[in-house]
Figure 1 (tube, chains in turn yellow, blue):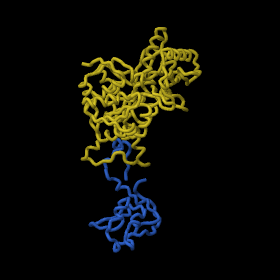
Figure 2 (cartoon, rainbow over the protein chains, first blue to last red; figure 1 turned 30 degrees about the vertical axis):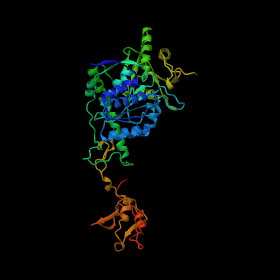
Figure 3 (cartoon, helix red, strand yellow; figure 1 turned 90 degrees about the vertical axis):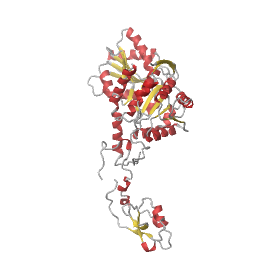
Figure 4 (tube, each protein chain N blue to C red; figure 1 turned 180 degrees about the vertical axis):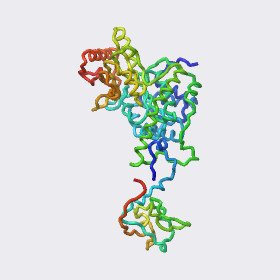
Length: 393
Length: 104
């Protein structure tokens, strides 16, 4: 029987790690993900996990250990945030290129400079082309559920791709929440036994991992790599459904909140979506036909499904918790807008950057966005395609 | 050598045909000079075999017998390392030849 436990985001990830008990856990502590690593170290010291716990001298080395251990044939995980993920950068591409299904909990935090320890999505968005699957969580429960599903998704033989599970720094990582923790044996059974593909420890087979490719093979190998993440949607869907059948919480590519007869829509990921739901409820009670679309999977980006949902809207605001200096809008916006391009009928669509460095976003801010969307829908005029929320102008 | 399409490749850049660099004829890069082996001067010290970066020294029956020009890039290391006063390997001029086979 599942139990209710009061845990913060970091503890929920550690709890899932204890239940899954991967073969190798390699991580270097960094705020706000430190408690994940500390708790795992404690589990190891207390004999609650059997996997090897490695604490190397940096995140670059932590990811290198993960790559080595995964190539050897183990189930492997890590956790990091911000500068730590940035330091892993070159190794991230190698993990993806070698098709190693490493799972990494990323406690989303801003990048320096200026130095800041609070939550935004600059870290994982900076790694969005590294080839990793990206799943974002609204709250502790979702972080727990997503982290468990990540192993099934990444390890699927059609996919074999590493996975990030994002949870917002401090807002989720350090906030206590009552969550449903499933039974150890049920989680172990759901995740299943790990089956390595071409493990290096299989010495009966001669092989080379990661040899050099020049102009003659690099392109084919990169295309071969892309197939893994492109195969992921059907697996993500099946795993999300099975999770729902087993544990009562079903997951898809995104969540639609009060979208049934909506004309206006706010697209926002992670913890801010929770605040947005309150704003939508208040706006709905004022008679506004507004809804929320909360992407859960950012890579592979579910462009067809999102476009099908949004094409009938009058106006859409995409809210990004990261910026892409010099680009035509922030990362989530450019994806959503591009997904809608092929449709003859499509909504007006605008982008607001919010919450950099952990700046608060409140119900009133979402209401301001709703007012702007209403005006755009009424007048058919977009005064600013790209703006900021809760920024001193 | 037929090259696989992206669909035919093993995932994760894994190469199950270990040791296949033997198919890569590095000798096609050679230009200008090539080593010439003079068997009667050779003291069988194996320095050339030890130093050759492309494993291009021919060994038969436990003795150095010459150079495998399919893999020799003409770097001259064997000739430099060859210890006799009258060297058993000397570099000689080679007519320019068009590269053929091997990797692109």
